[in-house]
Image (tube, rainbow, N blue to C red; front, top):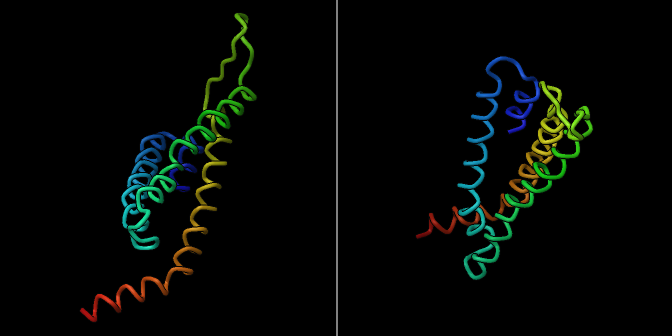
Length: 133
């Protein structure tokens, strides 16, 4: 996903389409693996609560990155118009937002790697118990 955001930040011809495609596929994969990950790691007893907490990242991230961060950085890049509004035209308007989002994705990637290292024993026990059946 970080690669997609870097492509969006570069603003080369066609990078909008490729970057959007990469980011969209990554979001879809992330949503698809949340369900089995939540059930395998935490069990099914409080599955509804745990799943909703894991899915809370979508509206929270949209608000923080799209609502606050993108709005504030756009206003910093924009020039004031005669009518009292702000306007910004060009690739530089959202470049810093995409770079920050790529950085957040890189941090998330390393946290995912840490999670996979820490849960290696859980998955080993799951595979052993399936082989014993």
